[in-house]
Image (cartoon, rainbow, N blue to C red):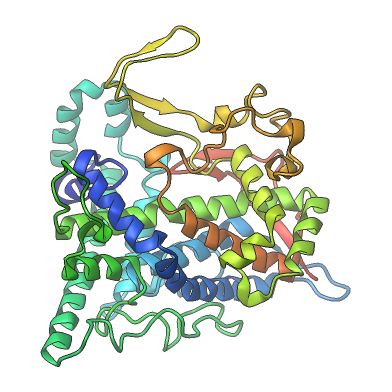
Length: 475
């Protein structure tokens, strides 16, 4: 239930836009993160994040003759994913000051805190508000009586309850911090132009400098992301959007199709919206997929051994690259089977743009807002045989056989069609690099602290309700 500027930001999101506004936003994403050359510029920060993750896990690992301490990989992956995707989105340091698995950014306290600290705190609070238990009381009212939405918005603005105030404050803080970063970038661009520099980002620090070590547990050091006083990382999504806007390459630099209006330069609100969308669409989905896959491999040691055998043929510096992906088909199959069983986004929504008649005779008129449950599709025995079993082989081209999907569009972890996940290539880079690096270093053994059966709760994503508790044994 957003009002004011947070509502304006949300309304410009790629997730909700339609028509030309959606096409322009989609092109901006495609130009910034789908092109191989631009995706490659994000690899150093992903690998930096992986080093931070391993540093946070190291104190929990076992050794010769001793069992490792139980560690919640769900929490560890959440810290890693927020730091990595937040840094890739905004170009500033998103690593927290505190210990492994902590959520609240203690760095955000104090007048000299940097923009990365403030963004970390605000984004964490905004993401928490997607939990139904932390949602405003006006949300269920809107869901039950959507025709009265203007009334609920009016009440939420004038009589906000505590969850509504928290959500609005967090969203406004994200917008304010984003605007300060943009102003800093613009000032640097003008200064560079005045001094005759070719680009606004020359001399700005990037994410590739060493940040995380075992000694500091992943805490940022000098030489990592540079905060707003010195600029944002030139490889970040925010910097890419600002560069494209400054150079006139709106919408990722692609020409409008015949009959369409041209792609207008993005406004500040639109830039803020797309960068926040980048973070919110990637952080939780990546961390949840990593956690679910880790649980499945910990409970299926034979599959874990197959993945580790693949990793033996991949150099550490290759992890996350396209070249490495070709050598790890079984790891990808494990991820896909994990996403089939536990899709991070268990449902998605579409506008029906034409009259449709289903095989069962049900008619869906054009203009209907449709909710699609990919969770149920993935567990339909008519679509995926033995749907409750973990069988990665169903996603191997040479071994799928009778266990493969019976429909070419049955696997919907990233959606389907024109609105399929625009960031899935980046997601695959992060997933392979993170879990691949963990499995190269450790054998995952389920801890006795893990509650069974494996339960999930629905928030922004399908989240393990009791964590993923494992013991790490060095290999």
